[in-house]
Length: 281
Length: 323
Image (tube, rainbow over the protein chains, first blue to last red):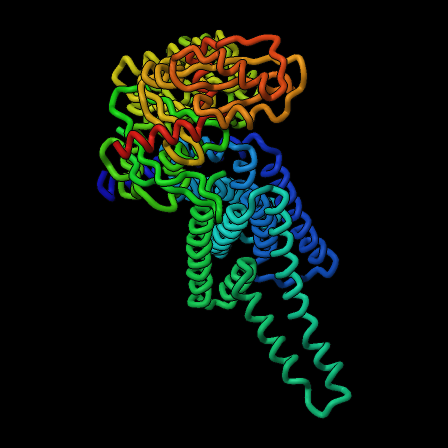
């Protein structure tokens, strides 16, 4: 087989894994529960907007549907982070991963198949909640502008990074339990950094009261936390990308898009390296 | 068909497979026999590309097992592991279609149906594989491995936990596969119905290939000498060490539950040495109440070499190599 045939065959394997994974996902309650929560959240936010307009008789919103879309994208990404974190170690625990590799399966095709599975689930989710948003827009007479499509596109890129991070955690761990704890640790670490980022300025000013100058080290930590969260959390990419879009800064929007895909590629490479080292048993 | 050169796998300080040189010819059924922990499964996993070797090389179908040849090789190989694992959300039909898809099997449905019919499971195609009994799962794994009509079939402990009737069905499938010109590599820790079909057998112990022969040749070599069961009236714990020092005694062992009263003496040559043995036992203070020569069959012979006589066999091989 030449290199092209190898990649053709690998793509065929990845698609087979994707079809099997998608079929399994369709029969699970998770995607439906997440979608329902996302649509309900969008409805609650919009109801709040409409109620504000009714109460005050006046409300200024440039893109009223962006916040519900952002919330829905985050919810779906979190669900897919959990699902992708369980994906490989569950198969490893059940022994089906080894059986799969008895056949003509390789690590690249397998990881690609798993990635495609979760991205297909996300595409279906996006299609459903965008449809719901269109319906909400029709009912409330709010504007459904193309910004929402750009936000959806960026959310696909950031979800891709989230999914690949989940797959990496799954490849790193031997059991579903340890992988879930690892995800929890990552989330708590990011949350901790975010809290540090939020509280550092007030802490710095408190400390500065007794001193002529604010402690330099605290300011350094503050800046470092800010930058780390921005680099490590795909959700921060989505937030920054949406803000850039609303500000009209297309360069920053595309930077976030590129960074998300770069994040995906790095996490894929690390997952590949980890799986090759860990094996399939 | 299979060629390994100084294939080695180490886990830290433990050497699971040690410089294994294996040659399996096209169209033969080769049995890899050895006790549990001998390194058979590790060898098979390396042949399947699942475990990377620490050193040494593997050639399958004349091609080195490298990333560049991975798919070209793996598409022609079917494998069944010792334990069966199936997706809990798929019926047998869906499971087999999934693997047919991976192997790019043409006319998959017809192939699935004919194979399932051959092992009398066609009525259970729409049952979830997870709900199958142990033997049904095992047979389903065989069907999965046979789907692409593999040129090389690798089986790890194929008779594990199977009833005699199921073993016969599996054996027929393997023989049919071999009659079609395909090669079969079977690994097992004991000789059973399925292993009887092997054309050649390799004995593995501590990751090394100690002996390689036809089953008949192996049987002839292993049943040479005499094996005499002794039963004493009084306990005689020092007897094995005392007898082992005699020039015509190769080894003495005590069967499980035999205490210090029952022993098996393995003697060299074909001469009747019962009188000398009796004299030696009496000299150690033992009172013989029964002395019975064993008639070893093939099954007993292989169990003997894998569990008890590995060092003796290794010695014979070294002598052969030196010659």
